[in-house]
Image 1 (cartoon, rainbow, N blue to C red):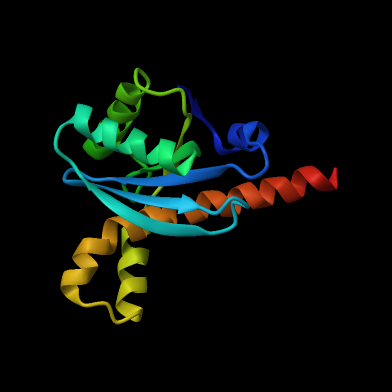
Image 2 (image 1 turned 180 degrees about the vertical axis):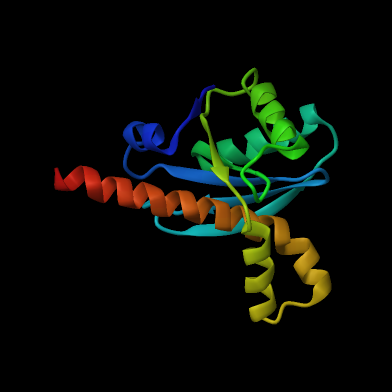
Length: 161
């Protein structure tokens, strides 16, 4: 397993390969999936975290079932751009996954993704209880959509040359 930049991923992906988005929390992992055309991110289930080995098994079973080509994982940078303990925990999670899968991981700056997800759920008039259930997957969807938009712009740039 390797960590790639979004530009490196754009060069490696084949047509009709879906990618997954991850919002790694201390208690849950929010999941999102792209369509095969990699235009839209859709929230999926939330994995309740237990311990790393079990979390990895559930995540990899999801990846196999959905035929995931890569993971885009939110990197929770501080607002000033510095790294804190959550960034270190995310990087450690990805390092630990390297023993378990050959699928690449792409770090994606997730600043404000949870805020955007919360705002979107509020606009849809989702109840507080339902928001709590859906926020992590909605945040994963925002993370993934940002990466998909970047992949699309890279594809346009590459095709115009």
